[in-house]
Amino acid sequence: MDRTVTAVTGTEPDRVAVGLPPVVGGRLEVPLVTGRRVTYANLDYAASTPSLTAVQQAVDRLLPWYSSVHRGAGFASAVSTSAYERARETVRSFTGAAPDATVVFTRNTTDALNLLGRALPAGTTVFRFNTDHHAALLAWRGSRVHRLARAATPGDAVVQLAKALADAPKGPRLVVITGASNVTGELWPVADLAEVARIHGARTVLDAAQLAGHRPLDLAGWNVDWVALSGHKMYAPFGAGALVGAADWLDAADPYLAGGGATARVDEEAGGESVAWSGLPHRHEGGSPNVVGVHAMAVACRTLAATGWDTVVRHEQALTARLREGLAAVPGVRVLDLWPDGHPRLGVVSFSLSRLGDAFADQRLVATALSAEHGIGVRDGAFCAHQAVRSLLGDAAGHQGDRALRASIGMGTTSEHVERLLAALEDLVRRGPRWSYDRPEDGWRPVPDPRPLPDLLRGNGNPPVLSE
Ligand code: PMP
Image (cartoon, rainbow, N blue to C red; front, side):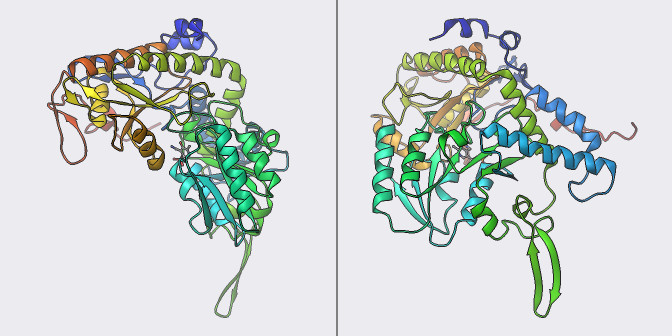
């Protein structure tokens, strides 16, 4: 483990000093039930990352110019349209796609995968693993789906896929490849799976929701046809995502959303309208586009590239190694892994506790107590990957159930956040929670809960600005 990095990234200023860009909320203070305030330990990057400060500033600079995209004659419209169209090239280049790849902007990865799902040629068979995220699992409901069982190793995933493709009926095929598991952080063998797919005449789509903000993408090098990604998981939480890749299937499909923008010409005809749909990429971008989100995503791509992947990866790997090492030392903690340790991974670690003091551990109560008593944000549940979590928990003696905890890190994480989590878990396991909690229908809550909401949510916290 690289102790030098963890040693110098204990605080937000230390983190910035090693070349990591600042994030909005890096020094956010949150209240505890005891009345103390502490810096927020955001350990939930796999759900959504904070905004980079550079992204926030870029959005602020764009907003005075904010206007309609592709729809206005004014100068501000030209600026907004230009920001939107320039972002395509930035995002394309960020994914490592070929220069002729199409970039369709979407809301997020789920939207991008569903768009591709609607564009599949008739008779397509889709191959995907049961351990995938629900977005990658369910976006193909109009098609024949070949379900691949949980892979015992990355090599087994490749072998299973090769066998399934060899036995599959003729016709178009699409293989869904997860870049990194949102449950275990493990990296999937993207290039190997894509090669097997290619040998068997299948197309591939990479679910890069987790991967994109943490490792470089190389769509052309991996020989992958499409990639789906989400701005909110790569430091640009402004509601944009993208589907990047081959034009042919997208061009041949009906628009994902019928309406303005997707249409080149509409004429009245007896019994309806005749419609000439737009070409790509506008064909699948019906309605007014999200220029703020798209611009934010492009700035995040540029900031990640300028930071340098070595810096990003070194920071995240050092913290992940410490997190895993620390979790292994907490009594009764079981870390969930798909594969034997030693495979490359992102900073996403799911685990479950067997005991809380002298009681059986309810994972939701652990997450609630981490927030209420320690100012730590983790996720609990099944992480939109129910089959993966159930299967992994089923392996863990004494940990059955369908909920786990997940700690996930990124560029804004410091070693203090990780150490605080480890110390809090140790204390929870040994002594149980130190506050009292009640369990209404929808989970646990501290009783009493004196934590005030911030001003922005209180009463008249946001009075309208009436003069400039
Ligand atoms: N795939 C993976 C691996 C994910 O982690 C997520 C989000 N948790 C998604 C797809 C869906 O992303 P979004 O919610 O941004 O559509």
